[in-house]
Length: 134
Image 1 (cartoon, rainbow, N blue to C red):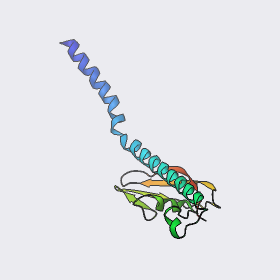
Image 2 (cartoon, rainbow, N blue to C red):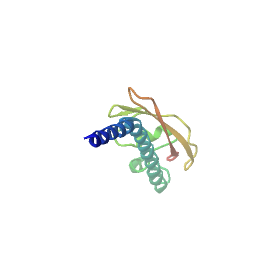
Image 3 (cartoon, rainbow, N blue to C red):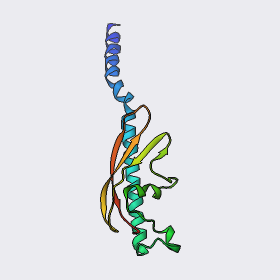
Image 4 (cartoon, one colour):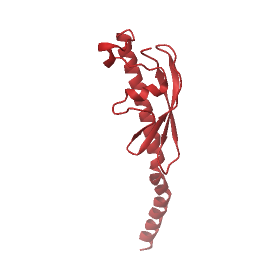
């Protein structure tokens, strides 16, 4: 009987030390969400640059679907499906892209994405923006 009580006490101590790690998954989830969105922005800008390269960076006429003008980090938001403006909100989370000029076609710059959600501190992620369609 004493051995059983000792085992239960040890399991209780282990549970008490492991529990805070499992409870604080919110910050990990927010970091992952910010990094995922930053990756999506990098990918969208790269694909857009590829389309623009194929059309000699023309955004007019039939090329409008293949190449969109991106001269600032904030222009990347319009490349994402369902996003029309910066900042944009998805599932109660607000994403804000900090404005930074990208320069001539093919120029890259480090862009900043800030994730805010009520009840949590802001999370910042960085992504690479690439200029196209100018």
